[in-house]
Length: 233
Image (tube, rainbow, N blue to C red; front, side):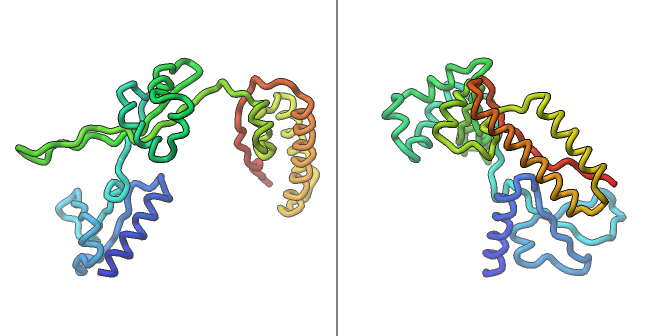
């Protein structure tokens, strides 16, 4: 039915786009029977107390639309599961680095290099004589702190990310001090505070860019995540 098809699309979009949502609840009055699509996509929740007489609650779990995955350190035996995934996207990596580049990447893990896999959990057999499904690696993430920041800067526009340079303690203190001065000197008008803070950050950012252009230090790689400081009156 159209109602079920539309509801499936909505729920699928919710779970795919909102990774923090584990379930969706539907609440119905006690006198109203479950209808399509609730009775098809949701399961009724059992009240904890027998004397409960409130509305009925139905739940649709994430795993109904998005399979649950486990994240763990990669192992050599994940190679056979991962190769088809990479080759389906492109065979360039295999042609450049060889047939066993994934196994070599996983085997070379160290304090500075880690590999994580996303794994679909095993599904046990539903009954006697039936076969279950073994756990399977479906994704790989390689992480390293051995970055050639200078080369990345030459190849990509990293200005929006402060060229992957960490702020020095002195620069952090300067920004904090100027922010406090702006808040103290400005009236309680949020618009004026925002404008002055933006000018302050622009000046500090320009000085950071000048420092980055003149610096040859490429041994620090970090992507700062910033937000405007909270304002209190």
